[in-house]
Image (tube, rainbow, N blue to C red; front, side):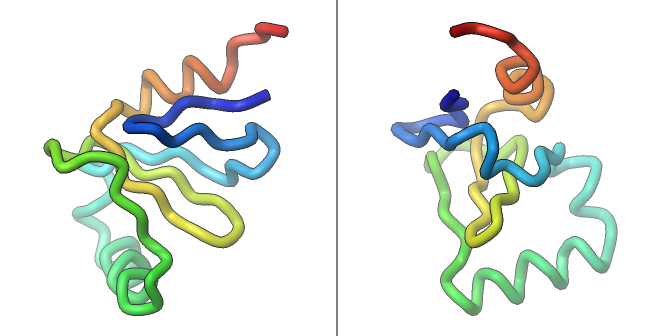
Length: 81
């Protein structure tokens, strides 16, 4: 099943490792260091030019999105076939 995370990006549910609220987690130095490192490696993708609300971690990329973490988590937990 695919999860729409914003823009034109949908990810396979099984590839999503974590969904995080950017406002709550960006105050943590370790998270900031992690995101800066991935930025340098070219492993961050912005789904929109709008204000970011969440980031989604996969095994090879981090997606920064304007869709809230709560909305993405709700989509993740829905059992639609």
